[in-house]
Each structure stands twice: as structure tokens, then as C-alpha cells.
Image (tube, rainbow, N blue to C red; front, side):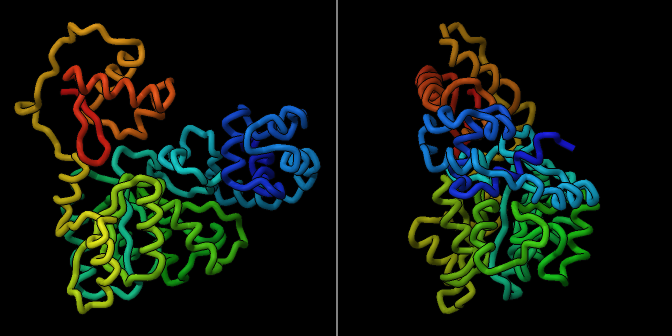
Length: 367
């Protein structure tokens, strides 16, 4: 058990400290324990914290309230993921409001090289089911992590098809891990955990699937993925919230079009019409838009030796890009020990020098 976990859990309970403030604090201190043991004057000086929030931290004393949660985590072999943990979903760190602590059961890599969320209506048509399965068939060769919300309809179809074809799939829940909602999907959730998938939530045990928890959950679905695929949805509802969140997080959004007279496709058609989503008709469209095409050894361009004088920042990025075919911009920012502005400047310079090329889906590779 992580000895700092009691402080990590406590940080989520401090009055006036929300997810944005917790992220700020995590960036300033090496552990949650250090946050609580810091001087009030040090806390006050942190931009975004100030006197009121510093007081809330120093006055917090309800650490024992987390004892039951600790026992639950240990009993059910749950993996708690604090915002600075190496296995925490790194893509969420580029969202302004990432969860402070996540609770995870499963074996899927939450930082897989390719992660796609597939979402849609709870009341899907045969067309929606067919398109979900077709898209997954097309994506299967790349073995992406498939993320959804375990709801009826498109969510469940995506999870079930992924399990059937041994693709890793993770459900993000709007409640604690002591229950599964809807209850009819308990066996599906067990299959996902027992296989190479899992279940993930930021909610503690005994948190019920209340209505207001679902939009909160949806931001994780949007933020932890490279792209979101919307299969069928009305113009209002959870899928539209997720799609809009993905846009706000600068993620790629794709939508499957439908008849203009079909209420189940109204949301997808609107996303396409308003340029909030790219129209797709199969998984190959997703692969092409994301720049995920596999390159054969014979046709892969050989990287020429560099006779160009690179700056230190450019050398760091160049060495990183040599390690695999392509990197998402978020991944470059995370793995390079330089600021995001320095990364952007170095990438632009490398592009101008003909060393690096930008690909669809915010990917970069060596030429």
C-alpha cells in the first residue's frame, strides 16, 4: 500500500480545493504528504491557491475518514493512481481538470500508444451496432485500447465486441468500484477485468451513479483518448457532452453519419455539419485521419544522417522520434524534459529543416 495514499485521498476532500487546484499543488510538491506538511506561507504564495485555500489545507484533519476506503482498495486489489503516478493516464494531464486520484481494476495499459473511445446512444439501431462492429474490425489490427462508459447500447456493443476479439477495453464508470451500473453489465465488467481490459473511476466506494456524475465521468472518456468516435446519438445527451469535451481538450472527434430523418443520427449529423467532427464511414477513415497507417520495411523512408547542427532541445526531440514511427504531441511534451513552448519551437524548426513531418491527428515523425 502506498504510504502517501492517505494524503492523496485526503487532498480530494479538502474544502475549496478542486481538481484544478489539486493539479497546481501536485506540480509544486513531490508528494501529497508534502502539500499538507508545507508551511501556510508557502502554500499562499502558489498562484491559484492563496490564503483561503491554504487555510483549508492546514485546517484539514479528517484523515481517518479514509480508513474504510483504504481497506476497500486493499481487499479488492484496486490500483489507486495519483496524478503524478507513472501509470496515471498521461493524456489526462493535458486537460485543465484531471482527476486527482483514479481507482483502477484491470491490466490494460492506460497509456497505450493508441486509445480510442467509442460512444453513442443507449437505444441503438441495427445500423449503429453494425457500424460499431465494422469500425472495430477495421481497427483490430492496430490493437488500440477501446474506451467507453459501460452503458446500454453502443457502449456495451463496443466493450463486448472488443472482449470477443481480444482487444483491450476499459470502462470509465460514474460511480464507485463497489458496484456496477447498469447491474446487467456485471458479467461484462468481470470479463473485461479478467481479460486484458479493466474498469476505471475517480469516484470512491458507495458513490451512487447519480445523474450529475455522468458528465464528470465523460470528461475522463474524452481526455484519456487520442480520439472519440460517435456512432449514433441524438442532439442532446451524454455522447454530445463527451464529443464537445473532446473538442475542448483538442482531441480528434469522428462521427458516423445517418439519415437526416433519423433522430438517433441527429447528433452525429450536427457534429459533422458544425465541423466539430470528421465524417467517417469505417475504421480505415479513422486510421488515415490519425496517421496510424502501418509502414512496411521496404517502403518506409530511410532516415538520412543529419549533418545539420541541432540545438539541445531539437536533439532531445530527434532522439525521441527515432524510437518509433510516430509520437502524439501530448506524448512528446510528456517525455521531453523541456517546456511545451520549447517543444513547439523545436518541432517547428525541425520541420523547416526537413527533419520532422507533422501528420494528421497531431502526430509527428522523422522524415
